[in-house]
Length: 560
Image (cartoon, rainbow, N blue to C red):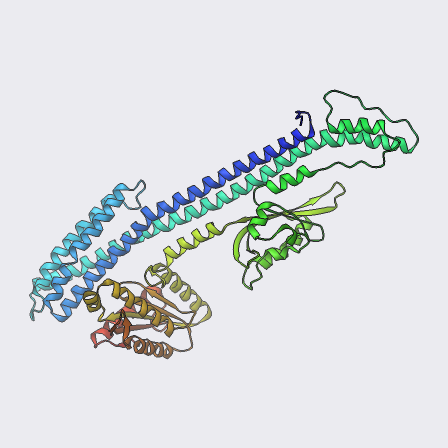
């Protein structure tokens, strides 16, 4: 078979080659984008997430030491002092780990001198604490001892604020990096969409130019000859050249065979080749909103055979769940007929097996020269991996890794919203500050694996005791806090507190061993006990310690 650069076949293959090059460029750009997204996630995992984790560990370790010192002061047990002093190496280790990360980081969220300064403050605090608590249990304290105790309290407060500031800065660095990566992902998706559209326009222009040169001009001469022949006029003889392609040969054959010529048709199958090889899932609709054409990517994405979709309504491609965006997207397609275009709309699609997946939808209408609607071009891009990555980052930032409960960040967001909502609508809500008793012996005796299982069981029991719109959060090792929203009266919080105590006191079976816990609960109610987050938390915390000092397994609330 002879192949000529002037043949229609060669020009069609040229168009296909251009489309394939465009597809290759888009594919490489998509590959590069996925690689950058992987690098960004790896950067979060290797640098920012460990920083945020160390920040939380730093403040939690310090709070544990301070709590043990306070228990030692209240009970006079020297063993507690020894235990509290033993936390010092752990604190220094965490501080040094943060310092190592800061030194290695290309853009550290905290200055090195801040870490060194906080380390010096902690060493001074630890030294003074060891002196002050060395005489724990003494009945009479000298003025000098009392002065040191006050000085120690001031140092503890200042150090706590400094540690919280460092933890907050590390958490903020993680959140800021997540927001940056989200923006980069959005810009990349927009860039890829623009690239796909540019490739489509470029290929369309090339096809239009080739069609004009190969089809329109030569066929215009054929049409003119048909008119002349129908009027009995002489036909125009085409100019024969050695470079004529198939259309030129057809025009010459028509001139030679005008007596027998009835109709002339020309194949445009190369357009189908372009459509079936373009990037993205392409679905072309007729003016009556039925599917006219799909490409291979659409077949692979939705799992239907081509004959199963041709003639169907486009709603078969969208999810029909009550809370999904799919129905809204399907309803929006007719608005494209009025000239409105849709670009990268978030939709929920459904494949032939009923599997639901997220996608970006783009659509635009096609009109002929008479401004009559010919069809609608729809493009779907699967964004499942992008959505999964976003959800994973959100989960890491807002939920406790062990129990799956809300973490400190998410709890404070919920509490802030509850305060604003209660002030606006004059509602009541309550905080329950919970601290487990007898948990440390479980860790010491059975190990942290069993301790973790106990904490998970406690979390499940707490969730069973509250409503679905309440918030249960884990804010420390064995400390939890519950936000009871939209209460009818303050006594409702006491009823739930009793329910929680009864639930926690039931022995729990973990790894074939029965374990018993105790619990102390502090209550504060908005607005009776305070109208700000800080006051409500402080009231609930103090009430919890009051309940613990009175023997535990009870709740307490400071009532005015």
